[in-house]
Amino acid sequence: GDSVTQMEGPVTLSEEAFLTINCTYTATGYPSLFWYVQYPGEGLQLLLKATKADDKGSNKGFEATYRKETTSFHLEKGSVQVSDSAVYFCALSARGGSNYKLTFGKGTLLTVNP
Amino acid sequence: DTAVSQTPKYLVTQMGNDKSIKCEQNLGHDTMYWYKQDSKKFLKIMFSYNNKELIINETVPNRFSPKSPDKAHLNLHINSLELGDSAVYFCASSLKDTQYFGPGTRLTVL
Image: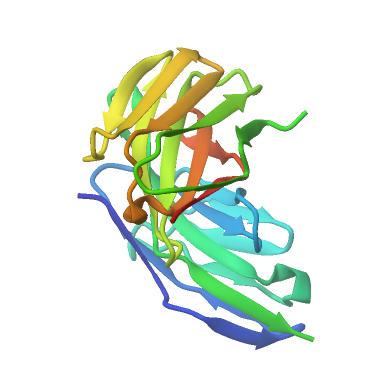
């Protein structure tokens, strides 16, 4: 079945450091790929998405590129802020008939210190 | 004007009780979902409804019964609550492949 593997946390960085959170996937067909962010005590927010190979999703300074050859969708940000501290989830959406099902990675806790 | 809303935000109850969580979306989406997030933050889909019809039922005990009175609402009723049901429950809705989540309901079973 479909699966998503993302790097185990926690990840602790200083403000303005470069961030990479690795994500790889296994899926049949051509899934869409997502990064969601969960700030403390809140729900999941869609951060960015990519729907086909070589697409780059970007939002709030975060980027991720859909790499079909390496089945990866790594999240990057050039300069993190304290306010980026959150749990980040990589996910894929695979279509089954008329329905789409999200499969999540286990989440990566990011803490950014001032 | 919240897109996906859930009530209540917190729910504390005794083992054996029956409780319900409500979800509403004003995005006009046809598909709604329930997810369970455990204490390690792992998210797993429980149910999916499309236009009030059950599409996905992921090996969830039959103590959990979703109900969709219309395509903007998907409620979750849980009978005979157990300690292991303690978790955060998220509702979501989608247009095609992109899902939008509610703020979550933290259920604590004592």
